[in-house]
Amino acid sequence: MTTDWSIVLDFLPQLLAGAKVTLIIALLGIAGGSVLGVVAGLMRAFGGTLLNGIAFAYVEVIRGTPIVVQVMFLYFALPVLAGLRIDPMGAAILAIVLNAGAYIAEIVRGAVLSINKGLTEAGLAMGLPYWKVLLHIVGPLAFRRLIPPLGNQFIVSLKDTSLFIVIGVGELTRTGQEIMSANFRAVEIWTAVAVLYLLMTGSLTLLLRVMEKRMRIL
Amino acid sequence: MSIIQFKRTFKHFGDLAVLDGVDLTIEEGEVVVLIGPSGSGKSTLLRCINGLERITGGDLIVDGLSVAGGPRQLRQIRQEAGMVFQQFNLFPQLTALDNVAFGPRRVRGASKAEAEVQALDLLAKVGLRDKAHSFPSALSGGQQQRVAIARALAIKPKVMLFDEPTSALDPELKQEVLNVMRGLAEEGMTMVVVTHEMAFAKQVGTRLIFMEHGHIAVDGDPREVIDTPPNERMKDFLRHVE
Ligand SMILES: Nc1ncnc2c1ncn2[C@@H]1O[C@H](COP(=O)(O)OP(=O)(O)OP(=O)(O)O)[C@@H](O)[C@H]1O
Ligand SMILES: [Mg+2]
Image (cartoon, rainbow over all chains, first blue to last red; front, top):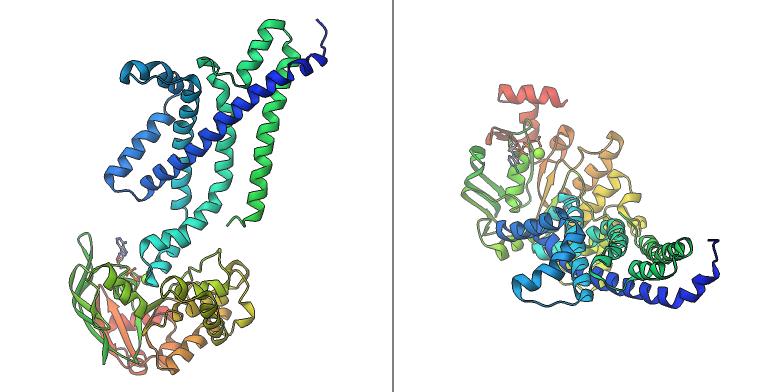
């Protein structure tokens, strides 16, 4: 079978539809994961024994299990356990939220704790309440340090969506697989799929570079 | 009028009594120089005054308020006692001007314009008006420390606490910081200074305290006690500092 790149054009609308599903899962998942991650990370850094313990357990469970197992659990086991029916798309988004949240929690915790204690003391010594020190001094500094590792996590999460092929979500990898099994055009289709992923991760990288440039990373 | 009063003050870290029942009264306008071997409790004594360390026994009154009080009272005390750190601790994301304007804006609730006018005056006072828009990373250590002094003055404290303000500086940069401190003393600012600069202690200090194991071992006129140390260990200590 000779390669024929023109067939990519025939399947482009289908592939783009798959890429759109990938993007939706990734963007919603990352947005939710960021919120969850910031909360869990702050619990790790500043929570008492209880809050810290809860966040620690969450992070360890997620980091200690594969994301495929996590999404299988959400999709197949949760309905049995809790009687909660969840559609594949919902399970996929929730899996990214929970998974990215755990890694982002560690990123947030690390960034916050990396800020020199002397700066906190300087703020407190002026008579600022602790929350204002966090808001006006530690927060902005930690945020700058957050951007590079956070960008990395966003890219990982975007690529992780391809694993949801196991629960039959019509994202990009699944779409490629379906086209492939009908026409066996492996080279053309998987090349096209790879290029589409590269376009998405590349745009993300570019966006983060711009943000890093605009903010002096300290 | 006394502005700082240690009343049998204790500070423990675990079982270790780092302040071991300190009695000390500091009057307004005094420039108290605090010396002593490493680990004798100088930093701890200073940091108890503004509640960065909480005392564990006795009492400590600053401008009429006990440091053992609640958070609100502690914040009030901290606004009366500015602190300058060995490592400067300037906020790296803010320019010199914004560092100095930070306290008035966030603590005293001053307007941006008002805080900046005052900050420029203070920067001029420490000789750095032309560096107002520089970030700390672009300043020398001596310049950073002078900005840090201006920042502490911006909240209009009644007392200034200095913890080894020149120890992190190259010898040629120490003097510019000491000169600013001398100027403050001449204006009548009450100061408590931990330092190894004996020349400064003699010229600017009105009182010298030698600490040992959480106690005040010597308390006297700087020139007298430095020239004729009343205590063997202080004599030893001074030999090492010179
Ligand atoms: N946060 C802390 N936890 C436990 N021990 C501490 C703490 N801070 C200080 N110490 C101990 O208290 C003692 C006094 O420390 P302090 O920093 O007040 O000494 P210092 O006189 O300032 O010494 P130096 O000249 O080295 O700065 C030391 O033995 C030190 O190890
Ligand atoms: Mg010290």
